[in-house]
Image 1 (spheres, one colour):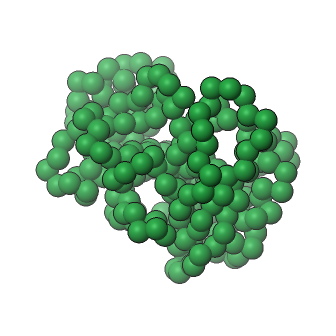
Image 2 (cartoon, rainbow, N blue to C red):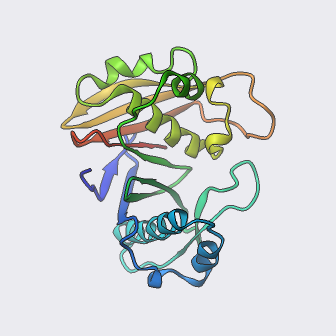
Length: 229
């Protein structure tokens, strides 16, 4: 995956990215608050991802505001419990993702942000029926063309949008459809506007976003980065 340090959503909002290798990073750079979070990780895999995600967030902040320092924690309560945030927040939105040895964090000024990194999705029909609303994947076939695997793009974008919403995989996936409109494409980067259709949602999830600016980035290896905000 090409490790971009800065991207721009179609509406002009700038995203600042930090990257880290899962399992190859030193946890000595974690703050006291972040070490408390690390201590709550129950598996070695989760601890490695936690360290890489926090250090990726530090690097994203360095790109956005050189010399700035902040700790990364997760919101403890509310409809978006679990959302990563900076302390102090500094008016910045944060999102973190991990995929097969690589972590990425995205920071932007303003409202909520979602980023997701995915390897090529190789799954059976049972997963597809569970993960997508009827007709949802079909919208990505024409948008992605030959450059991006449509199923991988659809899943990455859905995860990114659910992170913007703040509910993650607590949402009933079959009742949430993320529908893309291609604005322009160049050299593996697709600029999109995505519309969120939902129905029969359970209480407690908060208000979903309706329309978001979004990006899909690929480098030809099958890995896809999705961002929305």
